[in-house]
Length: 102
Figure 1: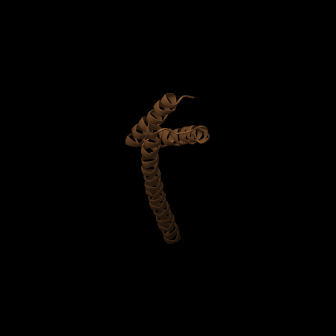
Figure 2: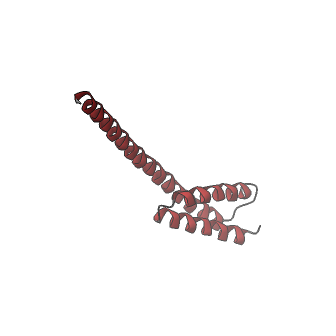
Figure 3: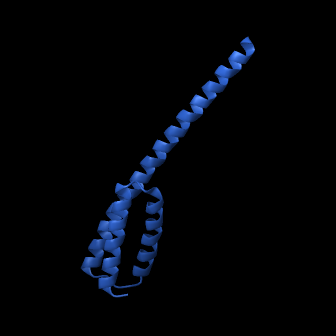
């Protein structure tokens, strides 16, 4: 593939990733992550011009932000599940105490 097409591909991937992050579309982020991996593997064997290096660097920077956002989302979901689990355990204990009193 020519450098111009690869550059367009990297810029499109960056734009897609930026949009998916803005929308917090985690499924899309995962799909785009796989597309990024494939694109970078294809670029690995090819000589790189300055524009491609800059596009790769910008994509890498956004990819790091995406990784951090995914980590934060995982932690948010973990906390939510923990809260639900604690609520369920408390509710079960309350019901058990009520059944003893009857």
